[in-house]
Length: 502
Image (cartoon, rainbow, N blue to C red; front, side, top):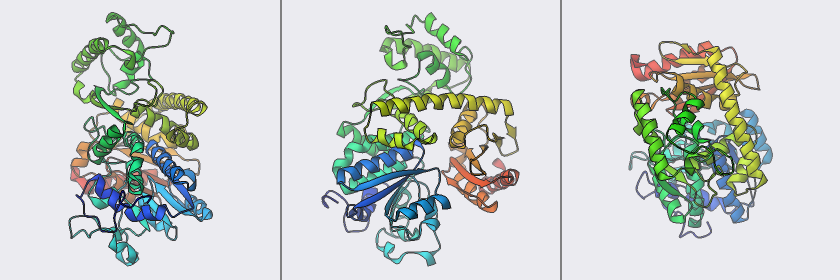
């Protein structure tokens, strides 16, 4: 650390369990080790949270004057690990790594991840790790010595729910603060990562440690909070598309873009700017927003939809230009996701590092392609249809949907087309001959005992694959031809967790 008074201490975690400060203290030893390095390899995930986390790590290392490289993976399989070992350098894993310690043995580095840890047998414990965090019996904190990696920073180790309270970028931010408190100016990337992981969806706002990070960011002047309609695309979608596609259920009188245009005309809302471009929600005056919202919410109520679930907090980056795709934090996350999902993680990292101009233009082009691909993928699912078993909705897209956007497509289908009375599972062929699986549920199901991360882990293991993720959303990679066997195992595992409810 550049100043040990600003970072963690030599002591075990002693601050309030479940706080940002407890995660910073957990990061203290890793921070001391990090600043000693001459060269670091950053390994991150390809989604928005991974891009934000990797970009944040890169900015920290650049500020410290440490030579580094950032590389990206969909998952840490054997092939990825071989590439990492070839680098033979201190490695910083961001937004992944927690579930892969059996592959990481012998690699020196740090993991800043928010996924649920899976304890290894105590015989495999690294003895030196025992001094870092209090044992579960002393204060209710998971013991660090259950997870054998040189430096493992994970919110679950200090009583923080990594599913809803903090993202991979947020954990990476905690390590940055352990290095130096001046890195509070990177809080916006932690929030972008949390929004990319949809950690605001359950309550209409960020909760837990994310709120502490939000407070740090507002004090640093890099974040601001407002109350508004929470349809996606407040600043980048033409107003009529914003209304039609922002609602994830069918609304009578607002099913098509033509319906939306007619509604706006009837309300005497100007559709285009003086430059000829479509106006966005951000362009409307408070009075115009009020008129549109009242009409749209009335239509929603008539269709049996509670409008209140579409109101809540929105987060902006004051230093970014409105309408740029970066001013609204959720749109920023989508831009990063577009880069990572289409093989241009380098663009996402450069944007997170602060590069604009041609880099941003190229990323916007990817985002436009991403939206087009999602529309086409939805059409594919409509054509092949959704199958149903007693415990699941499911579809197999074969090679017609990119495996990198399968989870997004499954989530869109789930929200727009189906009763959310049981989970949805989707299959798609990967380019390496395996099959990618994504599964989504609801928070209500999780509250009743469902843990999709554990379901994917156990079911994939039984068919020779690997899986994991979050309780509410998870995934797996399985051998081709094992889909129906896997589906049957998944249903049985969910029944074991929840009884006959699922």
